[in-house]
Amino acid sequence: MIQSVRRAAAILRELGAEQPRLGVTELAERLGLAKATVYGLIRALEEDELVERDVETGKYRLGPALLLLGNAFLDRHELRARSLLWADSLASRTSEAVRVGVPNGMSTLIVHHAFRPDNSLQILEVGATIPWHACALGRAMAAHQDEMAIGSLLDGSLPRLTGRTIVEPDGLRSSLDAIRRDGVAVENQEAVIGEGEIASPVFGQVGRVVGAIGVVGPVERLLPEGHVRKDILGAVKEVARGLSRDLGGARRYARAR
Image (cartoon, rainbow, N blue to C red):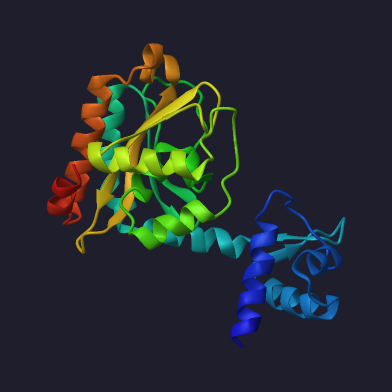
């Protein structure tokens, strides 16, 4: 039973990867399973609308039930719910977009995104994932994990997204030490060329990091001439501290500064 659940989850992950539609044979090859096994699992997933079959190609894609589950996850996520007003306030103060992220394995999952308040065309990033090491949100959270968790992150896959992405474990460890000391993480074009991010960790009741909140925008505005804008840095730390206080983690945040 447990094996079947894990195999079904693996099918969903494959369908959620870069190639959105896959046939039974392709899934079997990717997962190293028999075609009959994959077919039985995918038919069960189809009955519950977790996957659906494209009538033109005969291939499978993620189904509508997953959207409902995803929305339920966001609606019930305490950090996201608590961060709505804080994120809007930070976006208003800095005139930049604000993102809230949570740990998601080797990635950071964006659970809230407050648009830059200038009425420009922007793309909602809720649900997007970014490798933890390539964004300030991810590094702000990683810096406050225990040593075993940090070791696992540094031993895992560290893809280079741009020419500026830090992928060397020693360099990342030094960055995490500085973040732990300063209470803020800064990223300069490591995920997207021309874009930077300034983020601070958010702590919960039990004293562990539960997420991070940060400002994201063009490097010429956030990091003019390579220097962090002090007003944005201060605003991010202040909002992270307030959000942590709302979640019962203010004392832990004070110790992390």
